[in-house]
Image 1 (cartoon, rainbow, N blue to C red):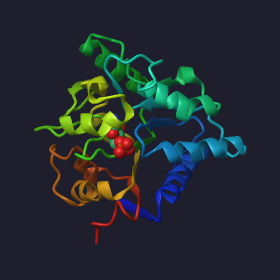
Image 2 (cartoon, rainbow, N blue to C red):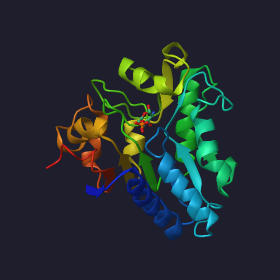
Image 3 (cartoon, rainbow, N blue to C red):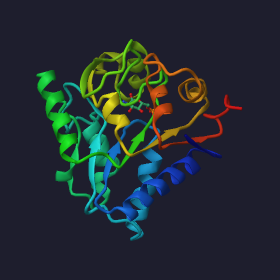
Image 4 (tube, protein in one colour):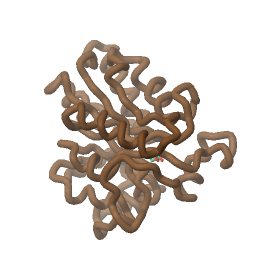
Length: 242
Ligand code: GLP
């Protein structure tokens, strides 16, 4: 595991964007696994800037996102499809037909998950998977649990995740209680993994996830077993690491 410690969120974002840019430059038709949340927003801004400068070409890139709230449409401004469009896809020359997010409007959970696993499989595999880290150690929406879920599945969000995401909604009642998420095996199948973490509120979970025991109760801890993981974080997020 490679740890890159940066001064602040802005430096974390440019370091992460440089890694993604290098991936696209080395393999223009790469498959990117993408994440939502506040952690990667700065990374996406940096990627847009590189595209606008003429330094990056997304025309051959394929992307698959980690997760989506069950019940939210792509037009809902809290859906992860909407997030990806507004933070990245609308601003670069990626072909939206080659971008995928689980279908939040598919009410049949089994079908939604099967379909998404098929979409991911058809890409031929993720070259670089970008991840944020939930306060309880979740990646995508793989919540703490007594086992690691392999493929895409429907999760009941934990109260801590609902609380953390309430800031994006009018009130807690509006936060969807379920989501579709890629499974741990799919995430672990990516050739490379890039995690972005920032802020003192992530310091405890960074310590547990990357330096504590590997357990499904801290889903991100499984990343310790992946051969090519880079964690880019700011000083505050790494403050509990000696
Ligand atoms: C959300 C997302 C995750 C994200 C995490 C952390 O629930 N499903 O993919 O990594 O929360 O979010 P943030 O970066 O805003 O702390």
